[in-house]
Image 1 (cartoon, rainbow, N blue to C red):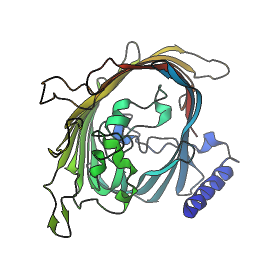
Image 2 (image 1 turned 30 degrees about the vertical axis):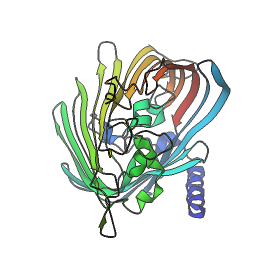
Image 3 (image 1 turned 90 degrees about the horizontal axis):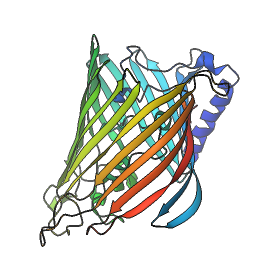
Length: 408
């Protein structure tokens, strides 16, 4: 903790020093100049501030909000939340060698996470090496999750309560891209530490992949000695949009201890598809993701632990007004809506044949105002229908959310 405070003190001192200079003269996004950006480019496609020829660049973003939610007529009242503060530190170590780290503080300092801290070695456009704490590229949101890029206060349910959002691990891998006229093709593949038995042994009493994020030991050792494989291929056309296909899989259980066989190797496999496009005539932005989870669970576990899960979301964002507003020259007012669905236990009860109904449906209409491209003020209305395992009438959650997010 002391080292972390020293690091933050150093970062803040640099920020103060940089603040003495006009940031517009120093702000240099570290990103491709091709114009065809993919979700996998998001790690460097951020605004950084760099002073002169110093090799270190800094940046970050902040999110805060207010909400008033009620579930089946019961409310916790007015709530103010400091969702997260994230710091980026990037360095060009040498030609074709660069480092980037992402440190996130959630709910004040309730959680402090290193979400990304890796070194990239660039050998050729189609062959680059990355090692350290890497972001496992499952789906699109896990790669491109920065708050200022979204019109919604909450992150997608499928990304946070089915998949482990901002899931990262220690490991190594390769990645590459190729451009051809209006097309770009890219891939990523990593071997990292991975999941553990908390995905089925947790306080949720169900199959719950996000529980593995609580295991901080994964940054220093593997739970079972078996690597997690994560891979993604993506293609984008400047007129059509981006399509990504990704896979994540590995052994999650402790199958052997000191040479003693405890159980067979039990795997989890996750497949995801993501797509985004902009309709040129109306400038409508559409972004969606769907994922399937398969977990090999021992027969000793009851049917409340799902062996198959699926879910996803689709966002539709429509700019309404683009003109100077309140002194902001490039302000944009958007109308948006998000549709979500997650089924944590896809299947039927063996005893009755009835459907297992552990699922949620959500609709979130939104109005967002962007006084500048890197800042968003958003107003959401959330409505959820959540059905329990036995298919009883769904509990209903509804309420208002208001907040902002901005890069700095």
